[in-house]
Amino acid sequence: MKKFGKALALLFAVAVMLTACAKPTQTTGGKEEGSDLAYIQNKGEMIVGITEYEPMNYKDDKDEWTGFDTEFAEMVAKKLGVTAKFVVIEWDGKIMELDSKAIDCVWNGMTLTDEVLKGMSCTNPYVVNAQVLVMKKDKIDTYKKVEDLKDVTFVAEAGSAGEKAIQEAGYTCTGVTAQSDALLEVSSGAADACVIDITMAKAMTGEGTSYADLAPGISLTEESYGIGFRKGSDMAEAVNKVIDELKKDGSLQKLADKYQLTLAE
Image (tube, rainbow, N blue to C red):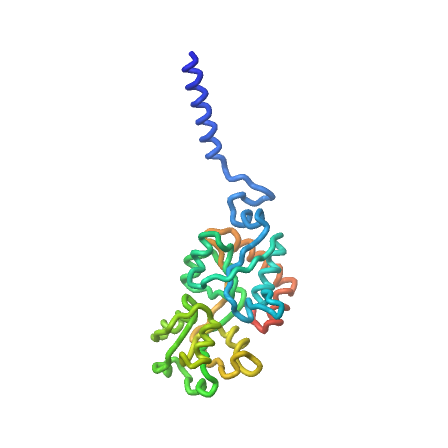
């Protein structure tokens, strides 16, 4: 009888365990506990993966992060009830950084390429952009179209839209860690040209900048920026709603005007 009682108790314990495992995801405040949004809100911070890229994310005179995407991320984070924390990443490994939860999103003037859309859950486009050729300003007018570039040596940020644009144009390039490194290579004469985002080209070349000897030229592509979250994340939908709010109240347009950027429709 004791053996039977023990066996019955064991069966009851196993049944309880199986029932617990089969329970549907609980919710808190209308959000699923297992959702990415709930995960980020519960820990109180959104870890934003970036590279140093003016005017999107860069350090000010106080060595603090600023820029359009920095301020934008902070505005969205506040609406979601969390704090934005910025972490510099290797751009080529951004999807791996997301999947490992080392970061919660990629928010750094990221072009919505096929690779990005396949590997992440992304927001709607928020800023329009282009990949442009940057060279020494005394040479840039020599190159009027892509076909003229056959004797040019290129550098680009590894894994970037600029690198892809060069390759799709039928040319090879050397990969570097960041777009700022690509500018340095061209300025030093180590390469003839780089292809970078027009937003950065406008902010960092010409009179009054660190690269007064460089200038942007022809565009290789036109594109849009988006924010990337883990594949399957519910954060993209949540952030899209916040972006719509920021557009309606005019605060996002005001921020775009501050940094001379064009919002996506």
